[in-house]
Length: 585
Image (cartoon, rainbow, N blue to C red; front, side):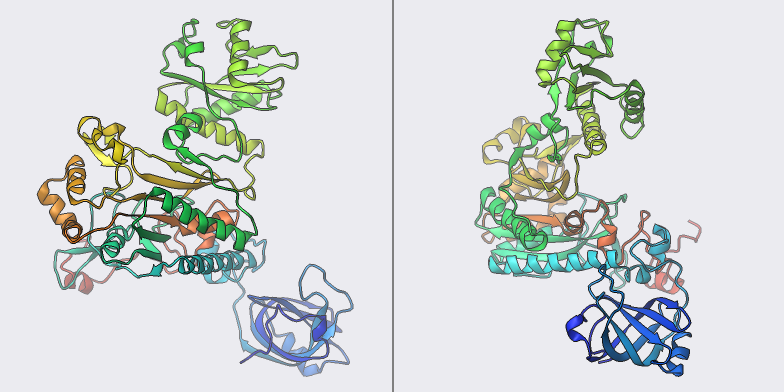
């Protein structure tokens, strides 16, 4: 070994020991007669000290050739520091080298390898191997490692077996776009990279592996944002001979274990909410329950008073913002313009202040009497000093817009503390959603999701009313996991394919292998998949998942470090029987 200790482990109890350290030069401070070097590895920083009259001239000469990020080996004695540094664990000691060896030189890095770096996102992505030397990024990956190990430990204790499923699979038409891989040995045919191991884990249930899990890479060719990457990681799980309650209890246990072992938090019992209530009270199927401001409907009270916006609306709905009556007209106008942005698309904002004397002053006073507005305050349970914000319009759009407004107010008022964790199960999603453009039904989750048994008769008469035996886990307004009880009956699965517009031939071509497997005794089964990157970023208190992935892609799906994706040679294209995009059609 080129070191006896790491740069983060020496303490005052090690004084007088002779040690060998290896690492990267963080900083050099040369005061002429005294020279200090901060030596860094992933475990920490240890200060080296060279003093005139104590250290040799040869050592001083070697030290003065060093630059930032040189790789160095130092052997010497641990001594107590005269000026201690309480900000680092090794701050009570330093090492006085008797030998200093340059293991490798280094170019000056393009940004500082420090917690607060001067490198922007693009530059750090290009030199990601340097960015990974920084403590915050290293800590993120250590957190990811810890969560993976705790997940495996819990799953093993619960009798699950980790099984690897194929990466080169068959393309399916449902869900996001597939990444496809041409097959050289089968010209004109393509593999797809898995969006999830869904069908394989169901086949494992048919195979008798009644408790499966996998921490698995998945791939989706879709538009990107802070919490999406073209390749991402799932904690993928499936169980046999279970009902929905069994799944909820098992995986609430997993999340509880992660909070306890990784964060030191004893998680309270996870509350449950139906999809219908989530949409009614929050306008979102992943509500942030760290704060209140639940939706209150005003439609019946607000219509028929001569205010055209309300009279023409399908829905009049609002939130009560506690203690925000001091908002100025300028602040409310700014908030109105924020809502009118194309991303949200609201046409305007109505407000009502509850004054200290209990009277209500609104932006629509000319249409509503003081008694009407007092009724609003009662409906919203608004107290003196509160601010009521109201939107109106088409029901679904208005709820989505009010959800954005609620989240924005929560952010502005400091109610969305990333260290305050509120976990929620959302249940009873619609099984299907109708695509107006395509004029057909689509599976809201995937085509293997089972309907609620009591809703099965509605498949023929009212498909839109059928509830799925499906569930999502939400933490702080972010969906971190979702799953369902699966269809395990061949006849019901065939009905589902038919409802989704598959002909018998198409269903056979796409999913015949699964349907055939169901002929050989498929058990009742269900499962869940957690977005491991999202879950880790939430535990790390961050919005973006990129810093919790060792080598992420940018918002264009590119790896700027290795310059990928890239073109391939004409020879490779010829072998794959693919024409170059540069060739004329």
